[in-house]
Image (cartoon, rainbow, N blue to C red; front, side, top):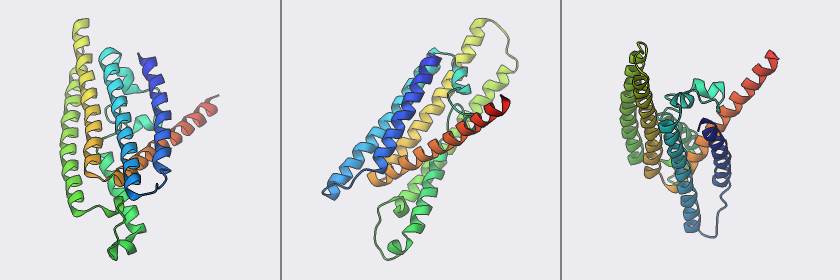
Length: 231
C-alpha cells in the first residue's frame, strides 16, 4: 500500500498542477455570470481534489504502515521538516489568506480607497475578516488538542513493551491521530472556501498551489545537490 500511495501522491501532484493552471488562466467569458460559474466549477473541482487525497491517505493510514505516512518518502527533506503530523499545519491556510489579502490590497489600494470593488482577496469585507479570525482561533484550539494527543502517544511509546497486540493497538491509535489531523486540514480548506467568493477562493487555491510547488521545488533541488555532493 505504501508504494501505491506513493504513486497516487505523484499522480495527485500532477493533477494539482493542471488544476492550478486552469485556475490561473481561466479566461473571462462573454459575461460576468459565466465567468463566475466557471470559477465556481474549478473551485469545486479543487475541493474534490483535496478531498480525494485525504480519503486515500486515510485508507492507507488504517490499512498500511502508518509510520511510512509520517516519514513520507515521496516528499523532499525540506517538505518533511515543515510537516505537522504528516502534513501541512492547518493554520498555514490563514497566514496564506492574510498574506495574499495584504499583497492584493496594496496593489489595488487606490481603487479600493475610491470605492471601487476589486472582488479579490484584497477586498475582503469586515465580516469576512471577522469570520476568518474566528475560524483561525477554533483551528488553533483543535491543532493543540491533536498535538497533545500525539504527545501523549509519544510519552507512552517511550516505554513501549508488551505483546504484538499492544503494539498494533498503539499503531492504530497513531493512525487515528493522523486521520484527525488530515480531517482538520480538509475541514479548514472547506470552511475558508465557504466564506469566500468564487474569485477569492480561486485565488486562495492558486496561492496554496504555488506555495506547495515552490517549497517542493526548492526541496527537491536541495536533495539533488546533496546527493550529487555525496557521490
